[in-house]
Image (cartoon, rainbow, N blue to C red):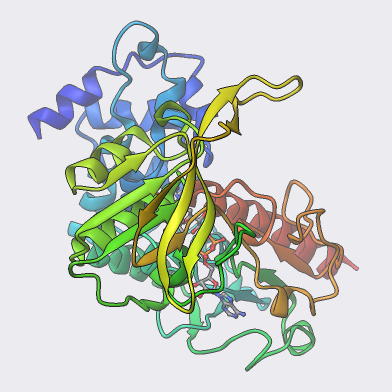
Length: 420
Ligand SMILES: Cc1cc2nc3c(=O)[nH]c(=O)nc-3n(C[C@H](O)[C@H](O)[C@H](O)COP(=O)(O)OP(=O)(O)OC[C@H]3O[C@@H](n4cnc5c(N)ncnc54)[C@H](O)[C@@H]3O)c2cc1C
């Protein structure tokens, strides 16, 4: 506890609150830290609950250096305030003490909203609707809630019991759940539009992108997202595994595979370590787990006849191209070489499930995502969307924020409808 008070006292309680602007949820960070300084922990939790219902989760998995801590004024000359740790402390304390998420409106409204997908976007949308007295029902295709929090982010980064207890708190607000219900298989959007006053779509986008290189259809090539979601791991002991990519998914896939016994795991990334989208901590943790990195390398070819036997790689140099904000990797002619391997995991990005999204008759973005306005409205006034299904930046906090924004837009839509 002394350690936590020390960390809270380190905060300068700035009046301009840049950390709050840096936080996707717009949490009032200086105020909850002030409450921690005064040891008024329950009030600190209530301040946080105004804007988020995921403190024990975001405190553990947010890329703070790019969000709240990245904006901390202390960071200019010293280390940033440990906002993530302080948020985790409050989230865990609320679980230990069984503090309820405060409701804003306890009146029992009649409106019902269907939420499709039980990941962070859907869970937060449901929570903010229930906090305001509306009845949300989550339809989830798996037999568990959490989405990528459950099946993507490994237990060694986000313990399952913390996730379960955080979800239980949300359900305690009065959220109904229907598991094993897949949009496009068990339910249709038409049915939901008829049965509910509004619908929120939060079905994510967890389909691995392909590199479109020769050999990608060989046995032994896996999409990293599907590998984690469906736990379709082959036997790794004594094997060499190549992971292509440089973000969260590449780190979680490589660490999981290494922990499952692979002899060598090489992460191949086109740019340098500094340019990797994964956080410094994730890269350091992967190295500690024994994952090896080949920076400034590109995969040209996956080799084998039916089963993967290796990859042909080429080294890259980084050049500043006109009009580009990031350095671009350019293959260095003649630097190709072969690496024998048993499996190749694609972790270069992800997209939406076309077989479902293509049937929804909603406007799409150029990248195939569901188009929304800044508050989660789609091209159909009764349907709202958020998270990875849309253009929202792909982090837990941004997905949650989009769910909360959509909840407020839904409330506004329901008010207008009841006035007419
Ligand atoms: C491996 C991995 C690690 C990551 N690590 C981090 C991290 O450390 N920090 C961070 O901030 N972000 C991280 N991210 C990104 C973050 O997890 C996502 O941006 C976020 O989970 C998106 O939330 P969502 O609710 O939109 O989608 P999801 O979390 O994918 O949830 C979608 C839900 O919808 C359900 N669903 C899908 N299709 C249907 C259907 N047809 N019918 C009904 N239900 C359906 C799914 O089963 C799932 O429960 C990571 C992503 C991955 C893949």
